[in-house]
Amino acid sequence: FSKGPPKVTYVPEALCEKESSIFAHYESGINFDKYDDILVDVSGSNPPKAIMGFEEAALCESLNRNVSKSGYKKPTPVQKHGIPIIAAGRDLMACAQTGSGKTAAFLLPILQQLMVDGVAASQFSEIQEPEVIIVAPTRELINQIYMEARKFAHGTCVRPVVVYGGISTGHTIREILKGCNVLCGTPGRLMDIIGRGKIGLSKLRYLVLDEADRMLDMGFEPAMRKLVGSPGMPAKEHRQTLMFSATYPEDIQKLAADFLKKDYLFLAVGVVGGACSDVEQVVVQVTKFSKRDQLLEVLKTTGSERTMVFVETKRQADFIATFLCQEKVNTTSIHGDREQREREQALGDFRSGRCPVLVATSVAARGLDIKDVQHIVNFDLPNNIDEYVHRIGRTGRCGNTGRQWRRRRRMGVMMHIYISFSFCFQVMFWFDLTFLLVLFCLKKIILHCLIFLEMCVVLDMGKPINVNHWLKSVCLR
Ligand SMILES: Nc1ncnc2c1ncn2[C@@H]1O[C@H](COP(=O)(O)OP(=O)(O)OP(=O)(O)O)[C@@H](O)[C@H]1O
Image (cartoon, rainbow, N blue to C red; front, side, top):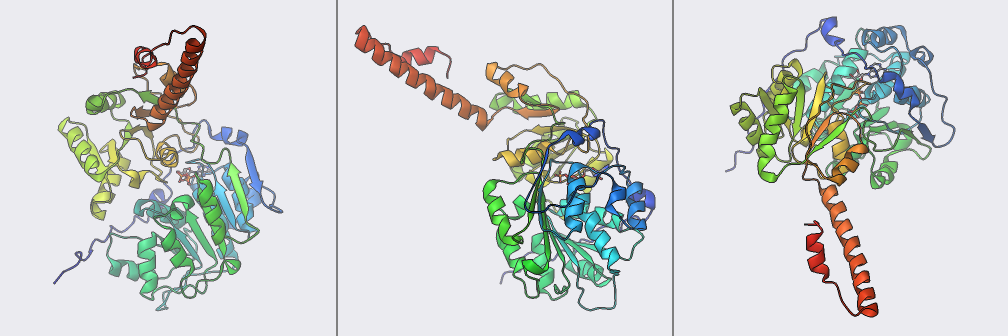
């Protein structure tokens, strides 16, 4: 008989309780004030007025203290608008560029309301009934959101808990039973824990979908529908539903409306789905067979600066990481086939700088907030533009730019056009479908012009041009 998958026994290390560790943060960058120039659009009826400073958010003393210990002096645009909207009890779909503080935009007003209502964790209950559920697509991201919630709730009676796959279920349940007000989870493990009857949903007041477009795409949509249809889950009219992301394809925006009250507000900071303007994008033209060597060359230039290399498949991630290690580049890797212990170790080594190069699949594309990531290399291009926006958003965060990376470029006119539309440090290896598409369209246009020309010549001069021959000689190969 089949044994099934091996039982997961991994228990992560206990978190450090020192304030210096809880509030460790990096400084906002020189472009932080430029956030104020970004156009903000709030659609929907009667949006509340934006706040200009954290003092206008009327946060309680402990929250205010935690905000300043986190190094936050002034709210970002998504916080200026998002905090009062959530505080006013409105449902929200918010879109703001990567690294612009969306996490605090939903955590602060939620925690503030819990504090006002005197919510306190209790460990004397067999079934825990959280007031807040936050879902995110990956284990590392939900863990990061949990760390943020723990930081802002520090010194209060509100207790956040995190649940995600790859760690011992027994350990997770024991953590929940210590008291749980804010439950952060990835969809699979969350549904598993709810199914085990350890979580009651009757007190739920806030449902937050971070990376909402990913949570509602084909991969996760069934789980999200199952979650909102779970026994005891308050209907959308009786809970507040909040969605955040840097990208929202239009079909997902329509679908998302199913989960929100009719009078929800749509907050757009800048261009919906736009890439972070603090990220310069550089295109390097390479041939299929020189890609690896070019990567090595790039990494020699970047030296010990933190660099993420995105690849398409888990196998490719292992392959490239092994190759780089053989070439004496301190590299680690993260992808879905690695055990949770290894994934956490890899991220830890990258964060600490022990391994300045992290080879990753799309599992690390969204949400991760790592200090001093200077370069992103798209060794394989992603399948869609949204994923690209999230990948490059791992650098240029919170008003930080980075050091400019330049190299000799071998490229044609089209490449220059491509670059002139973009800004900051992103090394993109060429094998760009978009670019091929542009070439293809150009070729078609020229072909049709030539056919037209040929027809004119045939009609007028009786001497046709050999279009194919002409095309071949016009470098459109
Ligand atoms: N008002 C603020 N002042 C200073 N730093 C801030 C402020 N708001 C957020 N930050 C910091 O900015 C960084 C990015 O924030 P966060 O991870 O919430 O961005 P995000 O918009 O969710 O990004 P992504 O779209 O990639 O998930 C974090 O380190 C956070 O602590």
